[in-house]
Amino acid sequence: MRFPIFAARLALTALLLAALIAALAVVSVRAGLAAFGTGLEAMTAAVVLELIALALALVWMVSALKHNRGEAKRIGMTALLGSLVLLYVPLHTVYQGLMAPLIHDATTDPDDPPTFVALAKRPPGANSTVFDAKEQISYRGEHNTVSYMLHEYYSGLTHPLALIMPPGKMFWRCFNTAKRMGWNIVDYNEKEGRIEATAASFWFGQVSDIVIRVRPAGALGARFDMRAESENGKRDFGRNIGLLKDYRAALNSL
View 1: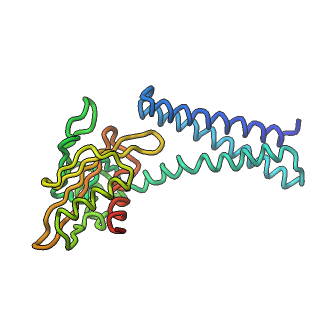
View 2: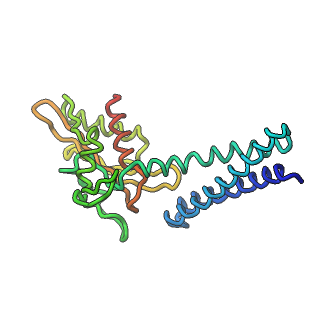
View 3: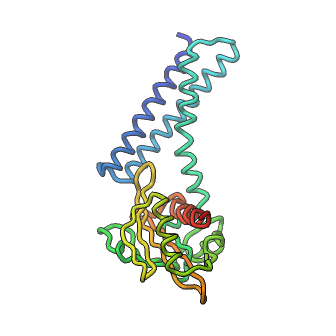
């Protein structure tokens, strides 16, 4: 058996094994059979196998082009394209995590963040619901507080969003936007101007707790603020800041 054919077959084997490990990791974490950290470790192993599959598939492709041979074409192309597809999601997630600061508790108002009420109670070991504006983090060569990082790098989010409409109308606009986002509404109180919801990540189902606050702004307007915090873990790969961005964009689109 020529080496290029062997490389193609080995690449496909590595790809299938990686897909199996990744699927088991996702199912196990979502079913509560494995911790999130364990799932990440398994996903890391799957990524390594996918990289091996990609390298072997490239060896096959270079050899096939060099010698103008079409042997193991279906196997080689399946391994090549499959590894590229499967690598996109984890590598894109890692890239987003590297580009985002280590803020697992993000808010549009770091100076006076919305507080959880219905979602205030969490099991032992979960993240505290108290917003720590003075927590020190490093980002882009700077070492400063969470509050500073949010104001400095996400000024578009921390700039107040106030609209000329009654607070009641703003409240239901926020409520309906949260529903359209597919979030699970846990509690809401129009009089308090408070909406609480949860949102689960697509792959591992990691839960972010969300609280939305609506308050009067001036004589004719209303102001919206929001907070999204991971229930567990200190690294969210930029997910909670992403939730703030997506929700604010959806709210503005109405």
